[in-house]
Image 1 (cartoon, rainbow, N blue to C red):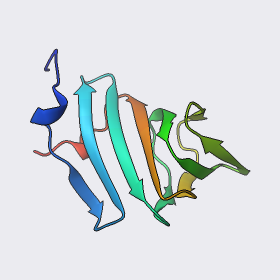
Image 2 (image 1 turned 135 degrees about the vertical axis):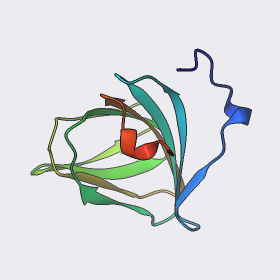
Image 3 (image 1 turned 90 degrees about the horizontal axis):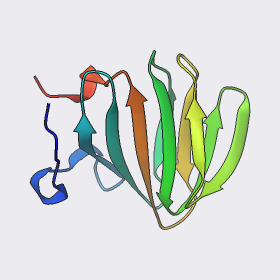
Length: 112
């Protein structure tokens, strides 16, 4: 576990070329922060996982779906995704950036 994570020391992981990339920030086995950047028209596909997730919109405008609910969020808004809830998003602005927080840590995001 690393106490301090400097932004310049962490590289981007490309999830969808020219559309979506992520950078893993501070994490332990109990919690993880991940910055995700979206380009114009990019989609975060609907998915679910056993982790609790809270998302803070840092930049841009998104349409988020969580379960049967759908709403537009913008910078400063937050979203909570309960465990095993189907969720996803679509960026509505030229660019968008969110900070995802997971508990427990998303082990599947860590390179082995």
